[in-house]
Length: 273
Image 1 (spheres, rainbow, N blue to C red):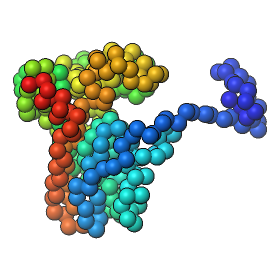
Image 2: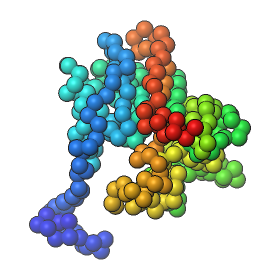
Image 3: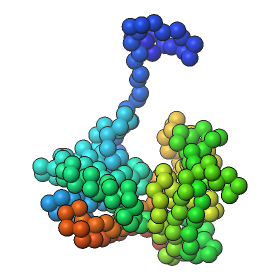
């Protein structure tokens, strides 16, 4: 709207000096997690275990109870610098640097694909074969109404997608689900979720790639309803960053840190045996 409260339309003609005011509702963060576990610490790094539901940094929707803001409050003298990101709903390992130089070095390791990340995903069905590689390009969806939804690209249209490859291995199975270990060899947005959905085994609880698109749109408009939860089974997608292996930015020695599978995913899986 224009300053003064007058709403504008796409056809509104603006004049020099007009001031536009963009308003957006800030989400209620009272139910968000407010604690995380430190898995590894030295004079250069924090490697932490982020719970599902916690944003990694402040945004227009989430200004408090983010990993960064909580780290500043809970870790004495810490000015955390994220080296990579996780989706808000994804639980597990996040690397933070204690200074700018360390952050740059670790981010360069990510850029050069020297960091090995492993995720555990609870998916519908049983992958066949039980292990292998999903090597399918990914691009921004051309038809979806969901902002930033990604899609795989048909073999006849490879030139329009970004090369994407995910290694997977089935760890265990239950009546309806499989617990699958995934290692992305590329770092595309939503890569694991898109690839598993493409393979016919979407991640349990995935509102974007696991169910019809109207579920996510309803979730954005009205929040999580009981009928929605009946379809999803979990209020978040069942993806957990379980292991990271990287070269230490000071010593060059490789360090590996593990995070146990989040309780909500494990409980759902165990209840289905």
